[in-house]
Length: 314
Image 1 (cartoon, rainbow, N blue to C red):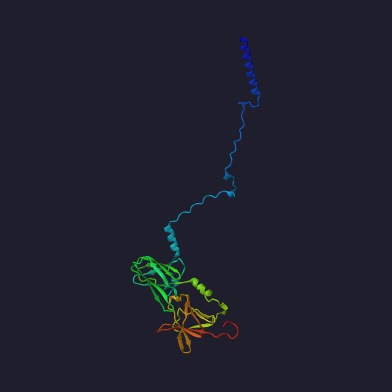
Image 2 (image 1 turned 90 degrees about the horizontal axis):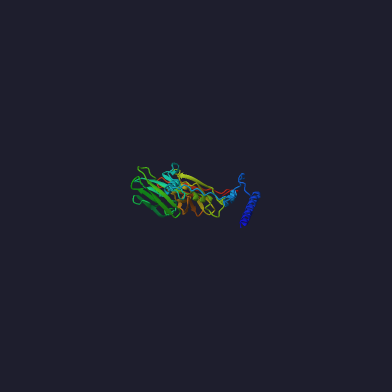
């Protein structure tokens, strides 16, 4: 039995020696005494947005504009829209504004005085409203004759140092007015408007179906009595059937003269229509007169010149 035990131990020692030799000779054996080479780090997949070309990169979020307080925005807008009296825009005591929709027109008033707002010929008020009806008097009236009525708005404050706004809506446009009450005797006696769009309409035609070359402008305009009036016509012409007398654009600020036809020593009032700053007479005439005033009358005579015998306009 001892002999068998010895044989078994011997066999185990031989197997151990063979295994050690096999591991030393194997290429997979690790030599812990030799330095090892650094291996590259494993690559990490790039994010999707890093793979986009520069032009396809998502835009950066927009910066938020600094908010403007509503009151500051209103103050700035009103200041830009405000129209004030201009020394170069007066006709006598009438302040003439160029009408622009949305503009704020200043009217200065004083206690004890009436300020008037004069509308265009034939323009009618639809409604008028004031912000302060307790300390301001706002009334509507009409001036002129039946053929050419003019609407007036009368404004008067009860004391100085106050202000209000007035919204004046007519059958043609809307006026935004700021009424300011001041101390003393300086005030807006009358306020009126020029209408550039309407002027352009008159200059570009207003006479449908008639070519410019077919109009006759051969009329003389003479002041035969009185001073040179501000309402003297700027031109007179006809289209072969009707006669047109064109006045300055600020004719709306003064009293319009009636028209008379002269036949020798006889003078007779003639019917006409008012179209903006023009009189339209449904006939031709040789001599007519515009007359205004009673004791110191002003007369402007309009004479149609005879047509030329050869060529040219009539």
